[in-house]
Amino acid sequence: MLALSYAVPSILIFITAALLTLVGAFGVLVMKNPVHSALSLIMTLFGVAVAFIAQSADFLAAVQIIVYAGAIVVLFLFVIMFLGVDRNDTVRVDPLVGQRVFAGAGVVITVGGLIALMARAHWVTGAMSVSTGGVALAPGSGNVQQLGTAVFTTYIFAFEATAALLIIAVVGAVLLARRERTSDESES
Amino acid sequence: MNSLLASADPLFSHGMTGVVILIVIIKVLVGFGALMGSVILMIWFERKAISDMQSRIGPQRWGPFGLLQTLADGIKLFFKEDLIPAEADRFVFKLAPYLVLVPALITFSIVPVGGTLNIGGHQVMLQIANPPMGILLMLAMSGISVYGVMLAGWSSGSKYPLLSSVRASAQMISYEAALGMTIVTVILATGSLTTHSIVTSQAHGIWHWNVIRLGIVPFVVFLISITAELNRPPFDVVEAESELVGGFHTEYSSLRFALFFLAEFMNTITMSAIMVTLFFGGPAGWIPPVPHFKWVFPIIWFLAKTTAFAFSYIWFRAALPRFRYDQLMDLGWKRLIPLSLGWMLIVAGFVVSMSWGLIMIATVLISYTLLERSFALGQSRGKDGEAILPTVGQRPLPGFALRDFTDGDANE
Image 1 (cartoon, helix red, strand yellow):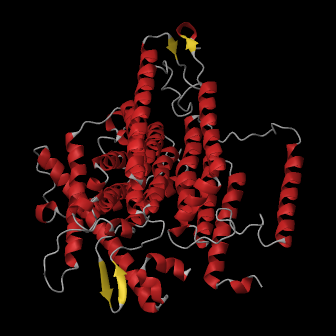
Image 2 (image 1 turned 45 degrees about the vertical axis):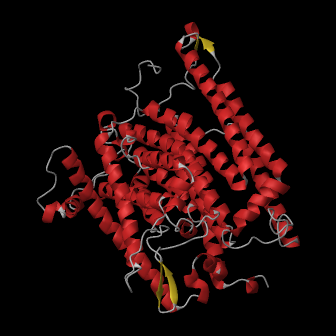
Image 3 (image 1 turned 180 degrees about the vertical axis):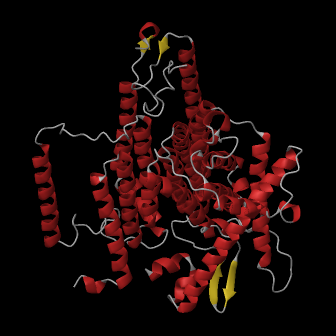
């Protein structure tokens, strides 16, 4: 019943996006070299961007690439290169003993929960789309206006709270990392 | 899906027929060919102009005025040995040149080269694509091209390319913020993301061009940050020969090296074209009253404007000394980002109403004063030696690559 309501190209696009996302996600877990993991993460992000475009959320797709692939993963790579953790000395011993059992249980619970939700309702969160309160996104660049209106009216407090949270995190990180010392004990 | 495509490009409004697909394929092929041809011309132009400015002769042997020099160089590089260093990460090493080249190609696809043609009842825009995300595609692609430079340096398994790629990533990320902010001012004035409407909104004469309409500031910020984004002089610390041998492509040879250079020049052309699109009205200009050939003149205007900017990049390279790395970062973070952010707020204010614009000017001026004060405070604290900020972490450079290199004091 679901398959009938979609055209063949849409299904092909969805399968491509899903494959990109899943293969990338597995790559992040499986790759031994952290740089390769980061590259797989980019692949996942591209898959999600393609899925966004297929649902005519062009703006979200562009932002996904600009912010996540263009800035955040670059910072990951920057840290990996900068601190020289890209040697192949993978962790042989678990830092947390017995965490594998709990991790496996977590995966089973999450996937099971998702499948149960999907079986009961068509949408996982119960809403067609979060930004517009059940109204589908307008095609073209119209959805930038929809998103902007939603973010700056309905969800203004959540939006500003997120902004404040990020600023606090940055200031906190700087404070923690750069403690001031006097000049005579400056270098170890 | 069809309605989504048609909302941006009238070519698809009658569905996907065979003719439409043929037109799209022809557009892509012509665009690709034109870009490749202009890259060859650009390399020749750069070498010739630089040699003129430096009182040299420059290439002159191959073809008239040395025009075929680039082809000769390409053939030479093609037949050279393709070397992959033993320490290299082979897969990423092979992947990196394409990560620079492909974004350069894709970005050009959103540039409007001319007006709209009517071919057999089909409205054909003279641009390869007009996606609804428009100019954001350019930002996304410049974000992706960072990876090419970064991974090329890292995967070489050599210390100088690694340093270069760390520099490149920091530099490109920093300047992308200012770049994005100036693009937002253009989007605010246009009210749309697509490059087509950005160009049509500037089509009514020179006073409507964004460079004048938005004040000269966004254009200047855009020009500086795009030069830094391209790693072109005076911001080419990424490939500073005196410090880093050859920069991120030191270990590359043969065709892969050629790909990097192709991408660099292609990016220069594309960014000149993007600048013309955003601030100088794209193909807009005076059209003489000639029957049947009116569609040619927008293309000529576009080419003339783009060539002017391409020449200005060459001029920068000949005239300006290279920035030091810390100066580069200071310029990006302390000057360009606050400037573009403040200007964006002012433009947004004036878009709403005159009074909001004035309020925004006052707010921005107050915050600039505060910012200047805090810069001065930071400067004076660094100098009198009372509080020295220690370096973060153990050593700011990767130990394995710089084992013998950084045993001195990291603060010096």
